[in-house]
Length: 274
Image 1 (cartoon, rainbow, N blue to C red):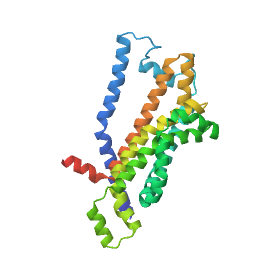
Image 2: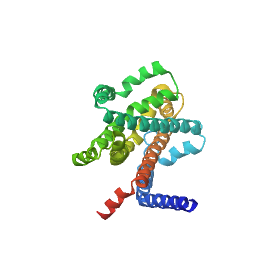
Image 3: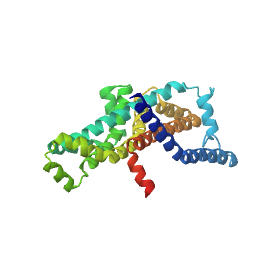
Image 4: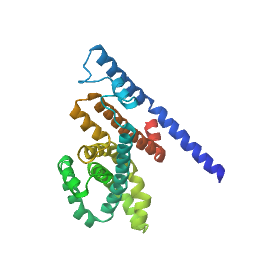
């Protein structure tokens, strides 16, 4: 048993390393972008209050500055906490709701129009109402992150659960399989590519929702820093926050992509053969 467990762990580690090696070009592109940004600002002598170089933004992150001495670890930790919890809540509830909708068409017909109506509302418009109802705190920002990002997860998962050939459904009915067996053995495995597509969208939208919540209902976090720096016309902290926000969103996206490769290795083998 131990040997089998070690083999499984080593296989997963190999897959993870292979996935990281395949994405090294993306890392190089990002590094090249920052280098181009740095040299362009210096070469064209762009004023720092208009567009600071990445080095100035990084200085505010790692070195205390007299003009904007923020508690960066606290603010980054707050935003990451809201972002990750918002993503997890959205993933669980979004996939769960999609399964319920496909399981029962009556529930889908009653509830889905309500979700469509909520999703069509501008989140920046209803955020003040959420603040009045729930007050300041991490719960408010997690709820806003959920409202921003849950719809793609629900729709993509529903599409995957429904995209089954009629002949296969007829065969399953002929074999007298239960509805639960149909979901566990056919629908859910078939929907995995769609689920991961929705989660990839959610990974970037969740942090947008968290930042919007911090704009309106928070006294800490990277969104709070952006608003505070805007009032003082201090541009480097704004770009410092934006860099961290972008890296956080990209990092979670890569984690989801890595999980997709580990859980669905057969899909990527087909791509390589093609």
